[in-house]
Length: 291
Length: 299
Image (cartoon, rainbow over all chains, first blue to last red; front, side):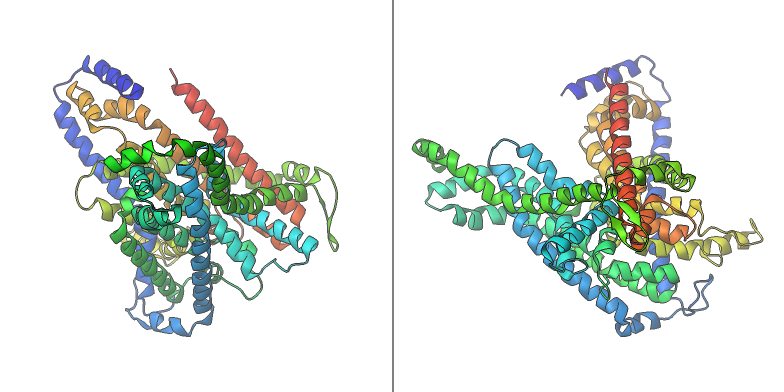
């Protein structure tokens, strides 16, 4: 409210030097604006465009112009153990981490929106913290944590699958808390009260009333949690053990060595997978509303 | 309606019970997530700090100690301070360009009313989800000595010999901008959507040109989002890993790859110190910038 009055003031000032050419310059301004916006969008999409183009080259060397086009690189992917295993591990880790993240994130979001208590804001920021801590720092911190745990309890957690999944749960939780909290804050509380006054206990109220109303939020949280876990690179680098590689790490290691249509084809499959996940999610909840 | 009235009217007798009960259920509900984040994030960061005070001896690896020598080593050796300042420079350049490139796109996305809006937003989000390594692959195709950019420039006749684009600072900056731009755009877009169109129209109807409207109305009102987006992009730029490794090559060093390299050499104390310096520098710089900007614009 305060903000809008102050800007109205600002607008009033501008009126003092009104110009007749205002309309014309507005049109030029709009063209310039759309042009800049198009440029920025094109820039964001440029790398995806070129990696897709390369995936269809006939020759192995990424030189332009291509000698011809072929689908053979896609056909060769199923025989490539590195990428298949990386994909399977990434799927396994991301699905498990997302399920655990939802299991602890939904109750936490429920608590943050439905119960008033001291330190609520503080807890909320704590649960969102893993999103802000850089991946490299998170990775190193978890690595030394695993080292210490192993020294003190002799549980072999360093480089284990459990340790990797635990790290990914940490990445998923903020997305669950953030998106489900937003969804709960927007849902009508009186319906829950009505259900309870009609004799439903808390669990039934949650299952039959609250859950259906926040389903879009849960779908969005699952997508963002899954994707941020599936694509996680920096933290995972510190947590994978010998012989255990996630797909992003496999792609990184291959690219450190060379770029060719094989890796481009793998990249295209990843792009398609994520695009499909987004389109499916979009049917439940508009992506533009949750990002 | 009658039901809601009864719902709010009946419970007074249970209020006392609810207080104690709700604190308990609050604990049960939020407990697991809190324990995971506290145990999995705060405690590890404390251990990381403790490790950074230890000593490294080749052969025995880590020796328990209480010394600042890792930090001293970092700030007195020009090799490391150069890496630090390169990282800072790259992050600042990328953040500035992201703001300039991102604002128009964010504005158009926020104001567009067409049915393409959702598709456009998905096109911004998709690259974000696809991961840094895949996008680096795209740039490598474009930047190679026989890559699209060099071949096109030679065909047009601007250059006669292929330029070295890969493994330069420019390539890394170009890559990081593409990585960070979606974050900037999405942050700005959500803030601009909250600014009413009428206010802009008021400025225009009072005779402001587009630039004056932007400078005197849109910019000040979008400032919270601009700060948030700038901070996010800066943090991501400082901590970039995949892009400098793949587009910068082995010789171009930034802080993220340096941390990983030290851990690969098993020098945990120094790696921990560098990691801690990276985190602290990022936090201090963003906090300072935040305070300065807010002071500058608070009138």
